[in-house]
Amino acid sequence: MIEEEIYNKCKKDWNCASSIISSLPFEEDTKKRIMESYVEKFVGKRIFLVQLVTSMIYQCGELNSKKDEINCYLSTYYSGRVEIPLKENSLILLHSIFRNIIKDNHEEDLLDMCKQGNELACNFIEEVSLI
Image (tube, rainbow, N blue to C red; front, side):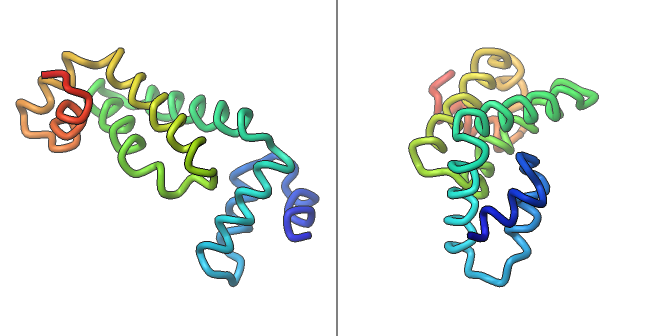
């Protein structure tokens, strides 16, 4: 019922929907269930994932330096899993997409950033065994 009201206000605009859902007076688990339901009913999981990945690539790619771009991806990789309203299998898929973007496109830059003391870069290198 709540999802339908949100859809009537926002259609498929995720920013609008997530803003409304976040402001609801419910526990975080309840809000997450509402978000999951909204995505499944009105947006579609695959479309949502594509929109999310596309917007993140665009957002990170717009930054001024390559290091800022990589930090943007690393931040998404490490912190984005918690806030996205999808079930675990979709989050794992999203997580692996970002991991592959970082690993396949920025391996040398990651190594340099780690040598310069970037903890996120070092953690990522250790996790995906680039050394």
